[in-house]
Image 1: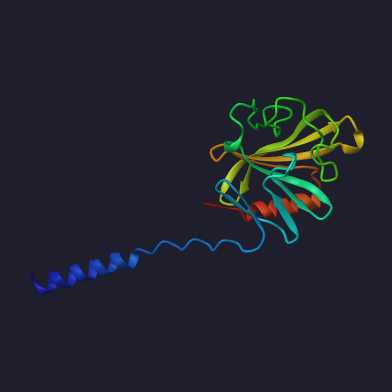
Image 2: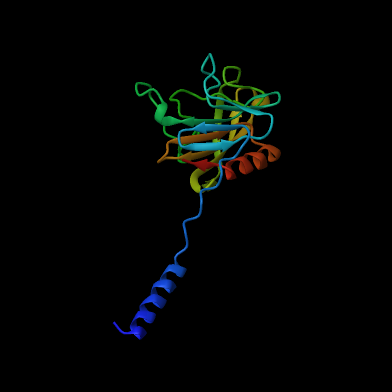
Length: 190
């Protein structure tokens, strides 16, 4: 091999080496309070708590803050009882955020599971896809009417069918909607 060919081979090798960039390091895990559900790690606002399992089972997966007992639920449906009937989340049905086969209750931050009136109706008012960290989830917002009209509210849902992770926000209102959107934007997956 001539000196000229050797210089050319080295120049090409250096050029190729200069074109490749190392893979970026994964972002550091968020510090502070968080909820880990399946492969999802969700940072929580300061002062918020996540109840993975409650003694009565009614508040399983609840995110609570201040006086609100359950502002949102984050559930891994892969852990659902295989013997129990379940409706998979879907924007194609009126109570699409509700996985039970009976009539849902009107859960709001002030009316947690077990203390809420039965729902009497549900109308889908918004749907599509919305981000949860780097992923896109099936998204829906329903206007819910209740037996006790003081509990009428809106419910928001995010569903990741492959991960089988369901997030439901109860008693939707602008301030909490923005907080929830920000919380979901900071989500990471393992």
